[in-house]
Image 1: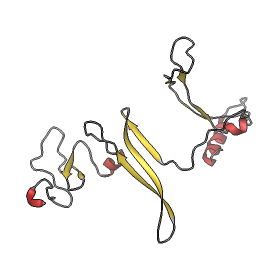
Image 2 (image 1 turned 135 degrees about the vertical axis):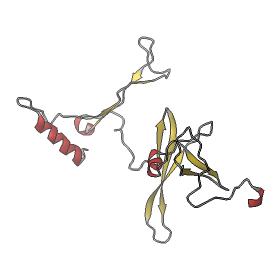
Image 3 (image 1 turned 180 degrees about the vertical axis):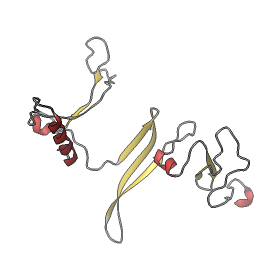
Image 4 (image 1 turned 30 degrees about the horizontal axis):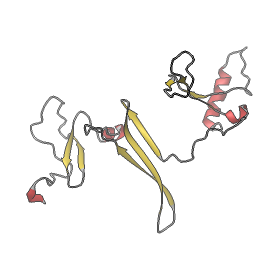
Length: 185
């Protein structure tokens, strides 16, 4: 199914064709495909030249209208994607989990999404770019160990990476209690 925006862009492209070129709109097809083949290292696929097979994913728009399905089922996407991962530097850096909640008082359903950052084996995590940009975080951040979490704040003094500030930055709401200090427990 074509979205209205794709229909509009497609119509503009067809109008832009110079004469005498003409597009047969009954057979125009578009979609997406991978640009680099993925190597499939599975033993049951044939290896005609003793090389691992390479796969290219192709998803053509309007496939149901332009082809006949002999067996199986058309590929579909669920209406609701419950889990999304972001990959940076070849590793999962964050994960968004979605679920439906029902308000006990009104019975109204709503979609709830929670974003989680992944810790690697060394304890590093990558904060989502939109979070760090919104808060102006770059180069260095202030960390505070709280009783039940780790607080992360922008470096209020903005000292360059290679310079130490003349005093420790403070959290926006002032100094916190040190959970490791026996007097604070």
